[in-house]
Length: 156
Ligand code: SME
Image 1 (cartoon, rainbow, N blue to C red):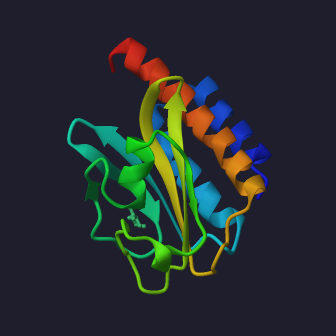
Image 2: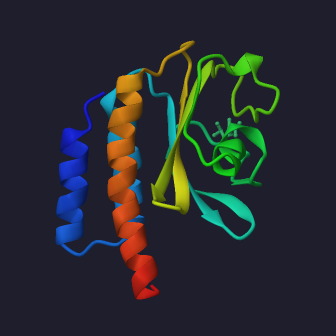
Image 3: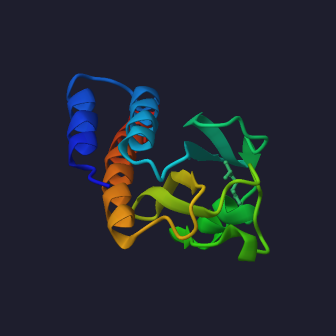
């Protein structure tokens, strides 16, 4: 995927004064529409009780809240790392949203040591996600983190 336009659009939203809520929704819609391999795209935010689903495009999921350490999403936070899972059926610590999902990519939304949440993408293709996708999505996650960090500093 190419994230150049998405990152530019998100920066423009920041320049116009939009808050993270609007940016997170715009990012999810833009990512989902950017590539046919992306069947479910969502953003989880990290709170005191773990991950909370902020918004998504795709089939409804029962995993609106995920404790740190649970599933691929919770493990990414616990290990403070992005996770590219080529075959979810091989994962022991996995929360299934749909039997059709074959692979999953989790990219943390972070600024230095601070983890704000993550972008989570499911695909119905095996090994759908490339290193190029990871780099592109890190660019989007970094832009979202800039806004979330600014709001945290403001205390809003
Ligand atoms: N599969 C994730 C749960 C979130 S759904 O994919 C929307 C996991 O194992 O944490």
